[in-house]
Image 1: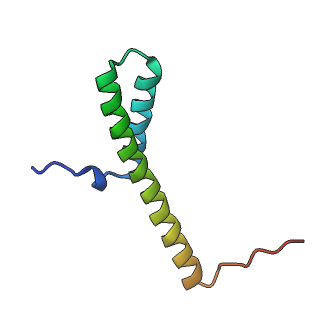
Image 2 (image 1 turned 30 degrees about the vertical axis):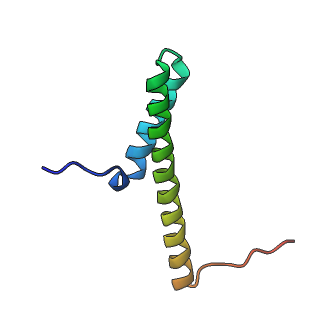
Length: 76
């Protein structure tokens, strides 16, 4: 069985791991060397989350345009 790449993680998986890292960092009991490694992992997970959100936004915009349901923004 092959191990899943971190970039193949779902948004929810990446977010859960990121939240866990944040909680561990806020605890204050992590040694500095581990803290740096946790920070690096958190940065990777944050990028995954941002990319997944951007992909979803692009898909939604594409569907709106395809279905002609996107309405122009109007200021009253």
